[in-house]
Image 1 (cartoon, each protein chain N blue to C red):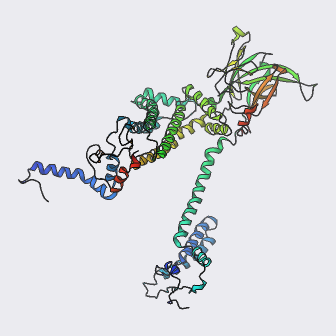
Image 2: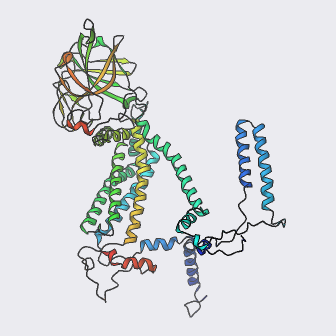
Image 3: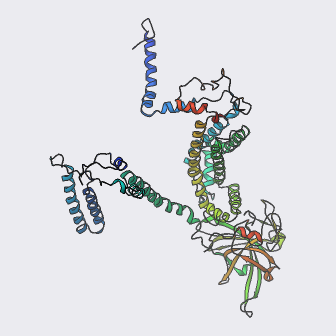
Amino acid sequence: MTTPYRRKPTKAEVRRQKMEELIVYPFDWLEERSGLVGGVRYFLFRNVPADINWMQTLGSAALTAFLVQAITGVILAMYYVPSADIDPHTGQPVAWESIVNITDHLTMGWLVRGMHKWGASVFIILMFLHMGRVFLFGAYKYPRELNWIIGVLILVSGMMEGFTGYLLPWDQTAYWATVVGINLNGTAPFLGPWLAQFLRGGQVVSGYTLTRFYSLHMLLIPGAIIGLITLHLYLVIRLGVTSPPWSKDAAGGEPEAEEAPKLRPGLTRPVPRPSGASAMQAEPGGRE
Amino acid sequence: MEPEQPSTDTEQESLHEEAHLPPPSLWPIGFAIGIVVVLVGLIIDPLLISSIGAAIAIVFGILWARDATRELRAEPITVEPERRETVEVEETTTADQQGLADAPVTRSVFLEGATLGLGAVIGGLIVVPVAGFAALPSFLGQTVHKVDLGPIANFPLGKWFITTFISDPAEGEVSRQTAFVRNNGPVANPQKPSEQVPSFTIISNHCVHLGCPVQANGPTGLKYTGTASFKEHTANGPVEFESVIPAGYGCPCHGGQYDPEGNRIAGPPVRALNRFSFEVVHGRLILGAPYSVSHVVNTGAQAQIYKYKEANAGNHVDGPEQWFYPLQPPQNQ
């Protein structure tokens, strides 16, 4: 083992080196067997155009908001009971009582439910802001049209999450908002009434509607959103990030020879990339 | 034709580059069939069928073992000689080549097809019942909930009551509904004019715009209407009757307005309020299935009701817009 020290390393230096080896060891172990560490680096330390700005963080912000919803939702599901039955002791519906319990009695329940409730609006708002940014920057144009389409599907799924989640408190607002929302679907021509009856799980909003919306809200739609986000990110990585419209590159100008490596190194330090990926990044079509 | 003789057809030769192995043994399949028979026999007849299955399994097991250990026991392995038809050059027309290219289903092609085919079958076996279970209960078995509203003697002639009842006791409080009920008194039976039958107006409070609960516009209770409110306990649980003098009905959500017969007079609703069919059994008023109404002419017992099959809120039942809603899902079977 070659040591950079001319003098004999002190005991403290040896200990420090051993500690570092110990810390690195599990990552090396994982990398050797899976390539995951390299994969994560490839994902996080991508080259991006030098002139990107803060508005291009809105997508990550929306992703963060979704993760907050997912995590708080999982915890809320531990305490929430999707039952339209009446509790014989209190005369109140069980679902509504469990919401009251979460909010008023369980430690920090008010906080997590609040995060989930307000975070829902944050998620939708951030998706719209992200969409506006993509639209105004022209980032939906070739070759990124497919990512726009996937983004729209995520937005629609997010709104379906809002619609199904709104029923779960099972109070008067929830009930009548769902009656109206389902009947709005029911006015669609031809298949509207069928869609409405499918959503209700019958002819009227009932306990079946509540359990079905709960299942859609916490299993089906989030699963779909996770899959769509995966596709969305895959395309972001594959196609790279667009320059803003005021960028010289974006105007189609050839970068000057001196500033040819206009790509800023990764967030913290340069990372060697596979040649295929950097070729993709430097592709003129890939950068608008 | 000697197997060693090289073929003149080079294209054909390229198909047979890999070495010839002994043909796959059929004994394991026989062994598996024996096991299946044993298992089926365990259900049907353990003594007879399982014994047959065990015999099959043992025989084929031995054959399989013999086959598998042939090399160990230094028996020569019979390799099928590489057989190839020599084809005269002038005979190899394009049609022949076409036939040769199509004819042999290679193992990889067969396995690919088998994987896709079996995958589709298994996928279908899972998806069809699951999708059916997700969708069909919403449409099939939707029954009419008959609601007992108590003796018709409770209802003074020509007085309206805001009637609240539980439509399905099995479902409980969530099925609570409201209807506006008025006793129109006896009228002549349309089929048999000599006979008198009771007549009631029973209007659903579900707004036909988007389903919010419409309210009666007018005074309620004994003090203002001169008619006492009352309660009844029937097979459907508690039923409440609050007396009212409605000048019409109004929806709190989007401002739809209706006259006392349920005709739309203002706002976004697309038709008149739904009504309930009813029957009188042993002197008790029994609610039946609701139906949709485009409009009503006249009032009370003289009302001419333009009836339609129950339609979703917001769906037109008459006029050109009705063509947008040609088929309503099955209800009230």
